[in-house]
Length: 291
Image 1: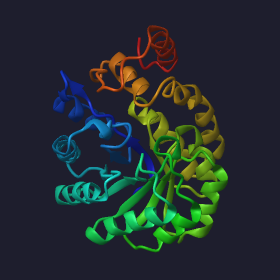
Image 2: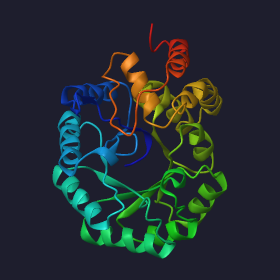
Image 3: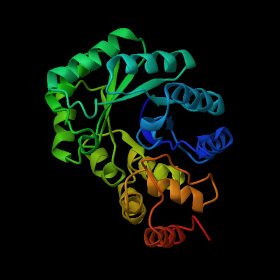
């Protein structure tokens, strides 16, 4: 279910509040352009700055706008286990297909702590769970052996892997059950990860170029390797531009330049310097995303 081209959906804001109209516009954009799964309320969705009520509202709006046409994998992670359970229970009531759970950040749990955290969430809800490992942002790396232990829990069906280590991805695939899906959490690594058995990507770039990202993933899935390679190399400058500064600053700036939504972010994120705006705009022009 959680495979293919999946978008780490941004959360649009207007005057400090959730921009419901903008969010619905983005969902329609993805419905029209080949995205397989919507992933709201993750890192790219600025979940860390959403109140619990806002988090739940974003999930509700996304579900309503998607209208059952594609699955929603809602971010519900927290460094507070009880809060993660609350968010997951709400998402389940809203009808999502599953929840994405980041490793607890800042408190830096041990591997045993990670197992206990995710096991308690899985025991508390009856909904598919996808793990999310991004040590560069959380300060903790979930090791392949730990993932394999968690993969024994039927409700835990996959992992978004953003460690940047292809050998770690390969180890996870080797150690886990065959129906446990590993997906890329880094756009630049999507094709390499799929080449060793990964099942797609939860993409930042897909926010602005969903058709291109989807085309690359589908080309690989359908055995058109040369086409997939060409699309991978074609997309590389665009992928890199999404990390000119901390995500989601560049992607929100890009969406603003494209006239999709306001580029408004919440502190502590802030607008990029003018020179980076100019650099980003030049790259977007090359892809005909702006005039």
